[in-house]
Length: 137
Image (cartoon, rainbow, N blue to C red; front, side):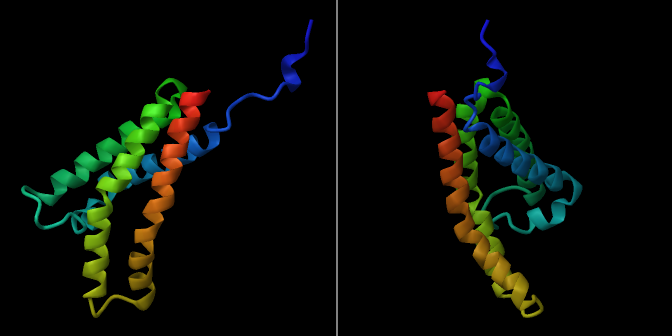
């Protein structure tokens, strides 16, 4: 009888998927616990109340986090995460514009708001890698 205890498990996409799931779940929680900062990032050109968008995006983050955490839905979760990171880019741009225009904002906060924008790229690419890895396993 073969000893499978030392056989490597093929889960190369598991850790990145769970890291993304944790990030999205945590962000989803914050959308409900402290919604006001998120409300302020909703582009003013969108119809309706900002709080509605804050809550809807929080729920979306919960759903996508769950999809990433479950191996059977991980590929879909990766694609949805990539779409979400693209979809929230206008909110991140709005936040950066608002912070840069705020004379009271610290230079550190301004730098953080601007540097956050290019961070969307690795989040999107990592999400797509998780999706491909899940499809191939």
